Image 1 (tube, rainbow, N blue to C red):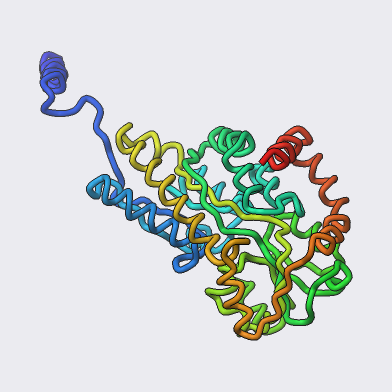
Image 2 (cartoon, one colour):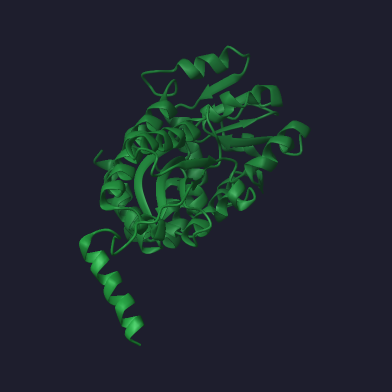
Length: 340
């Protein structure tokens, strides 16, 4: 017993003297960061910038490895948030769409035709809606750090030009695995098929589906014109903000200094990601749109009147999802956009 007491006393003395920290800070050799797509997509570029900045500013204490293709969840991108909450994934730059099955309020960014322009996206992410979203994510065991962007989701297909809701009739459309997208395209008379992006590309190639909806940066990098997607309609029906986030236990394992570095790097990388995502597709810069037109693709920009016809066609979906998301929360979003 005397021997045991001596060991305990000695250990306490050493800790007091500072030779062995009373609480050891244990970092992993590698932190796994999940994304759906890699660089050169804006999404992957933002994630890589985050990892680079953190590695440089922590002198390698925090090494972040990007795992694109949602490979950490076997390509099932809608399982990403749950996997991060459970610690299967350490960090992610994730889509609000993919995380919406776990947090219903994230469907606000998929409400049909809620956001008419980029200022409207900013009004949500940088206002009380964005603050509330971050609170909800934190309550679910994940630490949100910053916003980035995948962009407005435009519709493409291999069959015909789309100018009216009637033009959607019967088109087989790939949509992401979130119920609101199925409801939107069903309301427009299309036949939506939910599938991961890994499955979508071969489906487009074989003609198993006629079309899809994604930001133009995705269309451009993947050269979807070579997949028969030679009809593009710019309708800005939904947007896809991205969130930089860390599992709560991983976050708690970092020193306060490193937490600040990781957060600031995410904010900086997110701002850069937004810049890259909007390049060539804004009202002031149409260079990417013109580049796609130059490939022989029919790119249609809807007039306000044409867009309004789609708004009215999807109004029942909007009203139904207002209740599912929360009428007060949707009202907050509408007010933020109106005051942008």
